Image 1 (cartoon, rainbow, N blue to C red):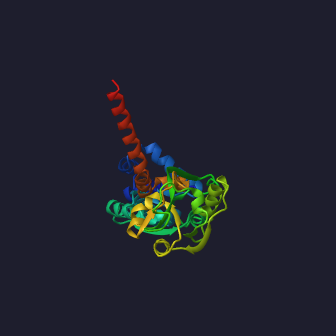
Image 2: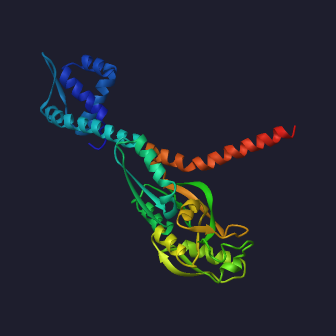
Length: 317
């Protein structure tokens, strides 16, 4: 029975209703030999005869009558299954589970969610925010469908796809009025003696910090407060002389909290970003839409760069 297809059962039910192979074949849009072959597939699989010829036409045998009762439900279930999967792939049903890094959750994700809801109003969306180290295992275990966050240290295993997004410039932020915020030409060495505030359970931050400061011959910064809340982190920096190293994309939110970037000659470090999902999930229309949204800034930057290059070329003629 595991080898049976709903197409064979549909042909079988058509014969039961028409009581004629010829009429059933016409109704199914196939030739009579093709219909007869389809019936034989069922008879071979079940090792029984399904029809017998009578003066009133072909009628189901006792075994055929048993199959008819079950086939009605099987075909109806197959049609419902096809409709439900189609709705899922088209974003008209189901749940899309999105994991987002702490910064993505408060910058781009809210706008993406609003657009997804407008595009797929019947789709349920569940979000989970955190640092990359917390979210990657959830993606691997199937608890998340898609993850937009900083890239993990190890590539994802086979069966997953990652679209690279623009790197994040990590800047040092302090409160307005912080001694370093008023200075120009601040060096990394000036930061090494400061206290820092960082996200909780974020070993990636510590690895980057240690590498950046070690490259300048400096000890890694002291992190005296770890917080799982961005608002708490910003408020703590605004109320103290502690610093925080955060993505430049948080500039507006940091400014609203009373912070300003320290004027270093370059970012403290850069972090690779990406949006990842299982390869087979690419069939889901909402997921494809989300990936396209995440890639919009990079595409816009490429278009702008191309326009500038064209303008320079025209001026040079």
